[in-house]
Length: 234
Ligand SMILES: [Zn+2]
Image 1 (cartoon, rainbow, N blue to C red):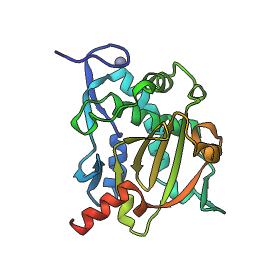
Image 2 (tube, rainbow, N blue to C red):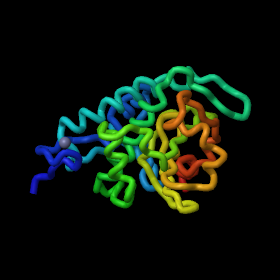
Image 3 (cartoon, rainbow, N blue to C red):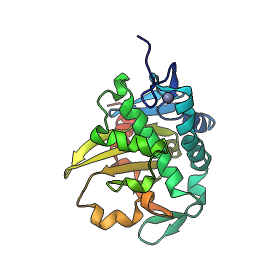
Image 4 (cartoon, helix red, strand yellow):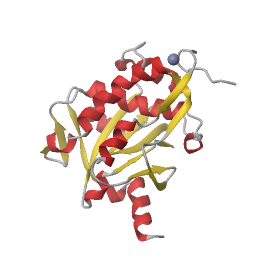
């Protein structure tokens, strides 16, 4: 049976990228193959993973605006950042809400997709309200249970800029925590109440006008561990 668009019910559906192809192109342009990490497994990829059964062309284009905005800024994100005390960075010229809409679009598409790599990933009861926000039916401030954090990886190995991953999730302290890697940066989205948030609320980018975050050692992240394992050939 032909599939219908999960947003508007329209037909036909088209090839919708979960992580936009533009992210893959950013990386490919740097003269190396892409690596993608799925469910903790790293593998080479071309232009990422897509799903032919979730979105019609109009809806894919609508949230594609969020992708376009972010891709323009991810290209030279690191160069634009200023170091601040306390291992913090500030990016002076990103519209935090627009960038947040991109990150929410990635996780929403991943949640809707039934592709094998994403079958187990779901935003659960939050999928609908996040969909309402990325499709403009509700303002992003409506998501008072969502906190989005961006960290910049300290890159001891420049090759680590050539990496992105699909979203993974876990439950911690009653909250759903979604994590993934974009080129050179780590994304963490807390959905629901979590005790850590008392301390970090002020740098959640979806409720801030200035993009700020922390520098982190990539090797200490789940994606970093997987990549080290791959390089060692374990
Ligand atoms: Zn549609």
